Amino acid sequence: MKNLTDRPDSVRNSVVILRSRDIDLTASDRAELHKSEMALGHVFQRIHRIEWKIVSKPQEVEARCRIHARSGEFAADGTANNARGAVQEATQKILKQKRRAKETSISRRRAPATNRSKAS
Image (cartoon, rainbow, N blue to C red; front, side):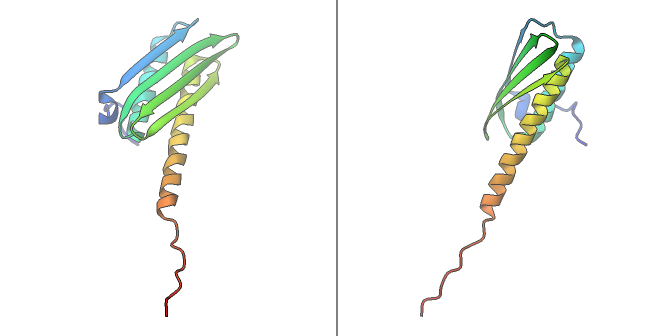
């Protein structure tokens, strides 16, 4: 497993925007955001901006994440009973999107060549 305390180069110069509405984020919530940033940094080559919007709703917390990276833009929502769970869910969804995008890219590169008829 990768050491998440090492800050990857892909997020070293990125901008992180955090907006929270109707909720006070605790130290453990902020630590989870940092952990999420490190996990995303190990997957993306170059992240320009990470935008988090955390909103408290009755009985649940919603976290929205948008990533602007060199490889494209990704967005996900997560809902849980607390902010940490919502951030974890949104992070997992973005990692899943990135995995799918990579698999699609690789499968296109490895497409079988068409049979060419020999000219006589």
